[in-house]
Image (cartoon, rainbow, N blue to C red):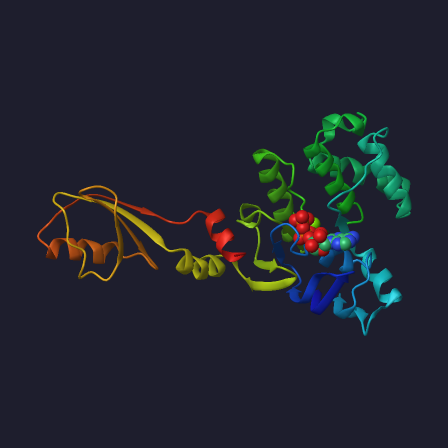
Length: 305
Ligand SMILES: Nc1ncnc2c1ncn2[C@@H]1O[C@H](COP(=O)(O)OP(=O)(O)OP(=O)(O)O)[C@@H](O)[C@H]1O
Ligand SMILES: [Mg+2]
């Protein structure tokens, strides 16, 4: 559905994309994750033909839209009819209401009047703006603006949704609702590609996560596999308290004493049972044991390290 190969984009002396490869398959929800400045927006803008990359290939709906240093305008125009796009920094007309805003965009799509009204009301309901649909956008919070932008992206019932940091500015309820909308889109057979710099945003809803760091894709896999791989690097922390001091010298583990009978053990995997056995073999008892798995944020920090 969307395939990017060896994409290079330089902004003067800044190499924003350094041979990027990624693939979004039909029907997938793809989370495009990366820290600030990694090249997420540059990737999205290139895909939509809004900026000019220098090298590589971009394929949309099985057709090359960019190859050999140029855009295929025809293929791009056709592809864009089937794409809904939510930009990272969008300007909304402050003096218009959500209904008026969507009305103008629907006219740009030449949507018939009857269909237009129905669609606009459905969408405003979907994104939770029904009650404020006739209020001026100028007074809207960041989260409400995000919701309106999402409605705008969905207006032409696109097969592929491309969303640049769509959850920024949403509160936890807004994020949960947003994820629900994405799930509905997936159920309806749509493909979703969205960027974020927060790992929690891609949790629960993405089939595939691609992590971009300094213009290159670091990993592309499902989140479970990515987590498992990075869990090994971050490690498990086990905190234990024993009835008498323990001599750990023959254990081979990285043990830090936290008190006379309290210890911290850091291991690549869950070694609770081995710790139990070792302590028992020393003739001591474990009074308390806690396992601390790294948080999503810790894993993410390690990923982009
Ligand atoms: N118009 C521009 N002119 C010069 N440099 C740019 C321009 N746009 C982006 N860059 C640089 O290219 C790199 C990638 O930027 P990009 O906006 O694609 O990152 P991003 O992953 O979207 O970051 P963020 O999470 O902050 O939105 C950064 O180093 C950025 O400073
Ligand atoms: Mg960006």
